[in-house]
Length: 448
Image (cartoon, rainbow, N blue to C red):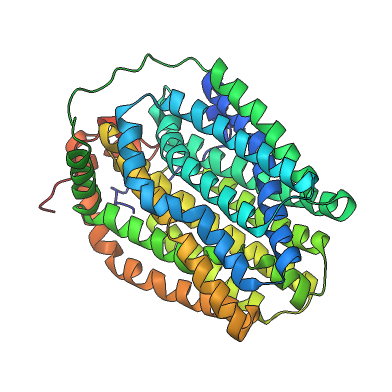
């Protein structure tokens, strides 16, 4: 979303030296470093898990089932996770969820290294991790904002989070591909389990303002109803969440089917899978860094449209290629477009949401982002089993292209609805030099 500003307002780009300005805060540095190490292990586990299931079963459909099992809890539990995030200490929630994730990775490593892993165990552990992630993601999204004292640096922190995530997506799969080829999948799971030590330690070192539990909204269902009405009663928030849901449904399954494309289309092995995921990660990393150097929320609406189109074209072209080099180029485009539109949507939501409802709104964001992906994985796995993975990628690209059309049509009206919020709060002149605190924003008007 963007607003039309007076001619005196310019869209200042952040100098390269300020691209990492959120790292000046100790709490955020601790969070950034711990998460960065842990996410490398997470990506290693994700690649190893997909490769292991496909190696054991040779079933594209079971790959879809695996993706469904790991992400469906985010869809079912997302709203409840948001209420928990708003009502309880987010810092402690994160420590608890990361500890449980460490337990899951340890059990998985033990089963694989002792050659006792079965498809049932793998799917069951994926469901367990999905339940943990449903609460972890909601709390993490809301917790990051509390680590940044200067609210004009919140957008930079969000972009750096995306950079961290995609740097890990670049490094993790590349290491996983080498390790799988050399010693098997079990070592990837073991490294992931060990990596959680870094994030738990960083969380324990973070010092935040003591949590004061709110006395209002004692009833969970009332809190859910209020959060739903707040999120979906204001068209800009509703449009963003629906767009994320569609892109996750049709665009995200490409990563689940990547082992099939690497082995059956490109006739490669685990290294090829690592190259493909690495190329996607490079594109996503550059996209996140591009957003980090932006100083303004202005113009993000058009960027969301352009990035979604780039992702769509990348997927469509990727589906036709049988050359590794061309595949790397097109999956690079896909990764770039995907992260730019996702991070831009996240930035807008974090800007306009009230802090006391942040957990619930971000749970709907997580529900759309992670919760719709399992349905996409299930559908894509079933379709690929029948018509092949190449045509499935083609269909995903076309559906992503169609998904952005309603948002593009609504954009002029959405701009008009967002602008009065900034005008009423007197922050319009400051929008051009940085995103403002979502905690200062009032509830979006229901009558707009």
